[in-house]
Image (tube, rainbow, N blue to C red; front, side, top):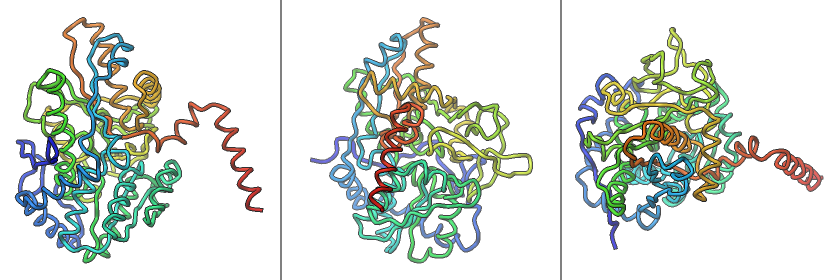
Length: 432
């Protein structure tokens, strides 16, 4: 039986123009050597949009391999715990194969690699979920795979590093720069420059040179397409508000894209406030203040940078959101006023993690919990205003298994430290 809500390509007035720009943002700022693979990629992207064989194959993988559709559920307990100021509905991408939304665009790009006859896959990753999804589909296709990961994220996300290696991927810890996602992207682009003839770069978010931002958004749009159909079962056609966390921005754009033309729907992207947006190096918000346009890693957008254009350090409790830039379509949607962007700090995210687990029995990813934390703010505001009870949708883009070591450090107490110490001693004893 085919998917009830199959994937399809969507065109909106907020799409990139033929030159690859969303308003003033986007483009292709790359070395001349990369223009050939980008042109090849663009031609393939144009072709698949009207290729029903490709679309049918992707839908079959979504259903039989990824496990789509993922559920949308009413978070009744959490809504009540917050005072019933809002009705909270959660789209749970954590039940997608590999535990996050990332597999959606990996499947689509992997089929493009197959179509182009590429023999090798490369990718960058921050939180590890994109790397895990890439390694997964590379294993299924029988292709060698190299994943680049900032050394700091490599250490913070050891569970995903372990799984990627079990899937046969070569995971490279990038030691230069800030040792985070930005540097992993740079390393992957350098690899692609050297090996583009036989290598396909599966990019992990709606960033990079054109046409990557559009490609990733389009494959992620299955999330919003399903959501638009699923809300009907709850007795309404459109929500009042939709929330999603924003790093590079793929989970948000995939969620929002089928609703961009629905002007009555409020769309909010939630940035990582870290330890506070007034602290240099203490957050990863690009759109809250001191807006600075830059050209980094092949595209033009807003970046966290100094007056000389140098990228500044970032911080977030979530490894997938500590990126210094934001996707060019997000920058455009911000300038157009179609999407508004807020932020929450690490402490609120940890509180949201505990409440979602306690009241709904769901272990969410730290990235996605930024949106849950912001929903709590909306619930508080609604109680104060005593207005209409809004229907609020959140894209919970992943499970929190990968965040065990980050969360346990702050929530596990001394028992967790004692466990790690005893395991270390046991392993040392076995090694003797």
